[in-house]
Length: 476
Image 1 (cartoon, one colour):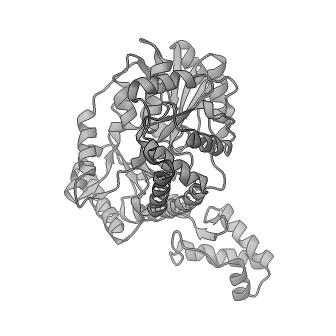
Image 2 (cartoon, rainbow, N blue to C red):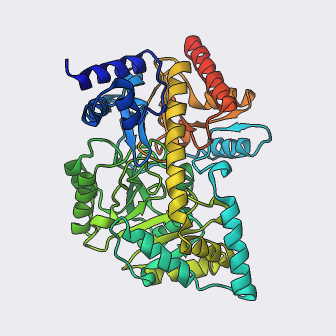
Image 3 (cartoon, rainbow, N blue to C red):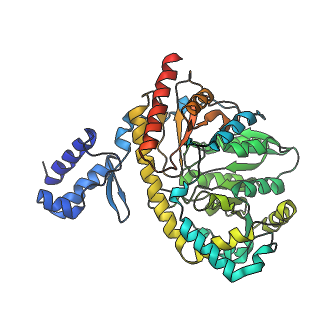
């Protein structure tokens, strides 16, 4: 046995036995060389072998850590045959009361809220944001009390263009329309891109507020499974032709609620098919900046040579949820979108826009994103480990590569809404899966957020949820 094989075997055994814990940092190459009296190349080979098995993961400028993946033998990725079968037909189902009960529960005092797909206040640069707010009040003074241009404040639009260039976007400030959050950007795009009676295509699962306002639109809603590991381009092309689809709404990166991301070649093919057939796409990329790998995931917009993709995102998931600043990037429809924005609300808060622009001008945004991604990745590892330890083996979940949420699948006999209500009795708030479903499916799912830093209270809460899961499964 080579030296590196002996090192790799020893570390693997320690991981399997739980001596090395999920998220624990491994010794540096220098430390291990000294400890085992071996060369750096032997240590590197050992770490590469362990990384290839998914047992450890490298983090940029931080070292090697024990991964969540070795314990996923008990939590396999959901197979396609397990997915509820959807059909392509217009439908609407009112789940408003369930949504209202979830939203009210999140505001109750003394609750452990595992239901927010936004960063915890504990992970936000509140002091630096406060500093930016003070500085712009001095700089702009009374001008911040005036209405801003409906399309947004110039300095902020410039910084949005710069940020977009990092994922391959080539835009001018005139292509940017600033909105009050990503949800408003999507809503405005729907207004300008659809006519009464149009047929639009969405994923069978969507963020529940998108589902809510879609039911009030004078359009016919059809579903297609965009966010699957095996996106079927041929079936997609057939569907948009057969049902005369004019618009698709897609969340390609860290989809809410599943956490799944589309592969690059699937994104490219989707845009090619839609663009060639004159079908517009609204891209919801609100989670795209919150990735855990070394490279930001690509966007649909980066493959758009037709001008058919309206790219929507916001700062709510990455920096300041309460600022309510989102935006849309579109070369073809920016003027129409700005007019629709003006008619809806005249403009977005000048104070919020100016504070964000100043924060980005100083270079603080990229530093904050780096720290946020690192913290969220650690949260994911610890939450995932706790679920594996405390939940029944029959509860399955996927491991996302970014975002804020885990999508938990219970046996079919367990009702997610009943689980939500029982959890609330223990002062824990989760989200029942059915409120994300266009066809009333996924009743045996819940969405659980890992946005709060993992501590003793969180661990005890996950443990309590696991006990409740055992109880409900035993009783069903």
